[in-house]
Amino acid sequence: MYNAFMEKSIISVVGKDRVGIIASICSYLAENDINILDITQTIVSGLFQMMMICDTDKCTKDFHIVADELAGIGVDLGVQIKLQKEEIFEKMQRI
Image (tube, rainbow, N blue to C red; front, side):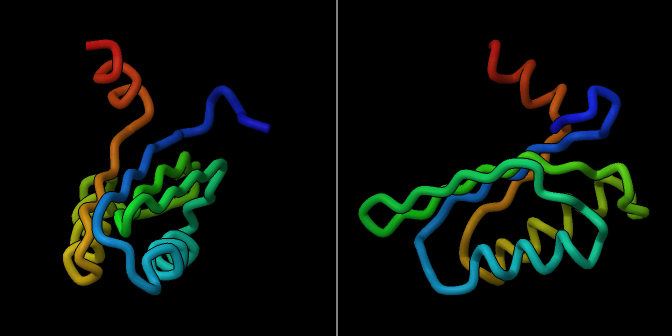
C-alpha cells in the first residue's frame, strides 16, 4: 500500500532486450535502499520497456546522483534509463 507522504520516483527503461537488465537495476536499487512499489515490463520484437514506481525515502544519495548513476548503468547495458520524481512525471504526462 502506498503512503501518501512517501517520496516516489518513476524509473523508465527502454532499449534492446538483453540478459541482466532487470537484475542490474534491481541490485542498484537494493544497494541504495530504494524500494520497488510497482513494476511493469514488456518485450516487443526484441525491444525492452520497463517502468518502476519506487519509494526513495530511505535513499541517502542526492536524487540527481541516483539519476546519473542509473543513466550510467543504462549506458553499460545499452539501454536508456531515466529517473523522474513522481510529481514531475505526472505533470509531463498532462502536457
